Amino acid sequence: MDDYGYINARVHSMQGQLLSQRQYDELLSKQTAHDVLELLLTSPYSTSIVRTSESLLETQRLEEGLRTDLCAHLRKIREMASEHPRTLLDAALFRWDVENLKAVLRGARINAPLEDLLALTIPIGMLDDVALVELARTRSLQDVANLLETWRVPLGKLLKNTLREHGEPQTLLSLEIEMDRFAFSQSIGMTSREKQQGRHVKEYLLSLADQANVLMAFRCLTDVELKTVDAAETYFLDVGGRLTRQTFRAVVSATDITHGLSKLMGTPHAWLAHTAPESRIGMISLIERKLREAVLRETRRLAHSDPLGIGVALRYVERKINEVRNLRLIMRGKAHGLSAAQITEWLVFEG
Image 1 (cartoon, rainbow, N blue to C red):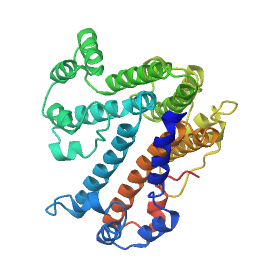
Image 2 (cartoon, rainbow, N blue to C red):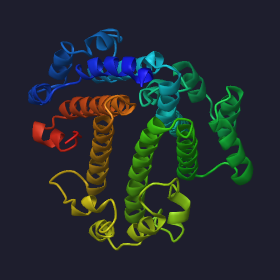
Image 3 (cartoon, one colour):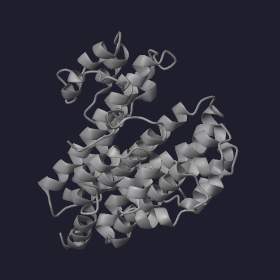
Image 4 (cartoon, rainbow, N blue to C red):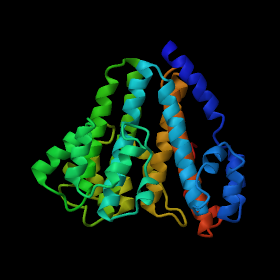
């Protein structure tokens, strides 16, 4: 466990810089986005925010500062890790290469401005900022695939094979599902190189796969274009998670969301069946929030079950990413004049 002693000591120190409930309450009490930014300039995020261009709008400055801070902290964890923890961290973080590539492909489809597109990425894996900029400037999937293959990024071969077999897709969803399926399979395979700690990372990855499957099942249920008899075969990530294909199919086939939630009774996700609609948040968004809370609880369990293992770092990664999401929501909510109560409904906490 010496491999994890140093990294966990540093991670515990970094956890101490995460915002407290009191700080969240203070941010929510502010009246404007400007007030939120001013308060964050007195927080651990100040250095990253100050380094952004003053020519940007306040919301843009905060977005870029948060992104820079998040990437710096997650990269720091990986860099300080020795060989064995780094292998497992790479397995845990590989999904962000996929998420970043999705953002690039979506942006290219609608000719989004480069700066807006990059703001949605978290470059902490094989694809750094420079690579993402180059990818964002391409305007065809074939060019993206060629670049990735040149850089020896495994996703390049997947894209090439998909384009060869099916051609250019009309929508990106089916391609995104293939990338997700590939990423989980690759990452879970990487965990087999380690024993006990590898099992912890595998549990974490499977909880993320469950989160993706449950959310997709309800998307299929509510979107007439996705609700097909083949939905379970097309969109289900069969990577060994606790949500079965049978349950996925049952949710998709339900008459409405309430009926779909009832299909989770008797499964490991029965707790979600008791989800009740809230006043302003949509049910799909509410389900997504509950699932994110569950992932936070899962990493807390892993950290507490083995305080000397990789779970400590995994918990910090999820808490840090979640905090940045929360701060973005607070800033955007204040910019649109929403009340503290309205914004709070969208925030996710560990519980």
